[in-house]
Length: 192
Image 1 (cartoon, rainbow, N blue to C red):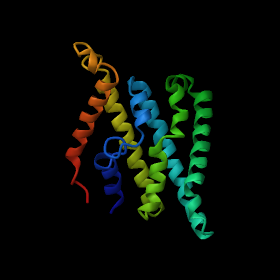
Image 2 (cartoon, helix red, strand yellow):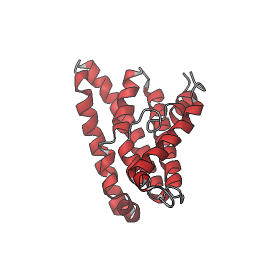
Image 3 (tube, rainbow, N blue to C red):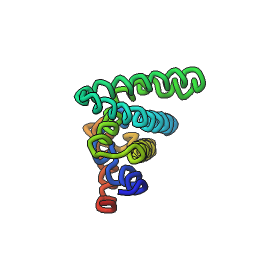
Image 4 (cartoon, helix red, strand yellow):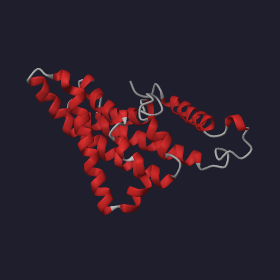
């Protein structure tokens, strides 16, 4: 599969949030405001691509020494270190974004989409370039889903005006995200 096909299939068809249901916690938590969604998306793009660039060669070293079974532990440690680096940079240079993201910035460490893309690259047998393309596509797809859902949540319908009490809050948010997920299913079959 070509590099562009990998990127676009991860954005549209194999979207980690809407098709594979990875990274749901920040998706639901940060999508209340558009500026927070864009900031979180940018941070996830940076972390996912950088984590892939670091973990792919590390996996090759683990394989060389036949200790590939340590993959998950090593990848989690690498991702945690990268997120801490980003958190320190945002705290120093982008204070507004840092405070807007709040508790959700450290959640990138436990965002299963970041770990998932690093492991999926290895499992798919991608080379370094293909792994970076896969990570970029997954991160851009995550960001698009986050920004679209922030737009949906900002409408009056999702703000619970005229909504029955039993559907207010979490049920309405989950229903809205399910409908958004269904809209991305229309892209299935575009890439083989």
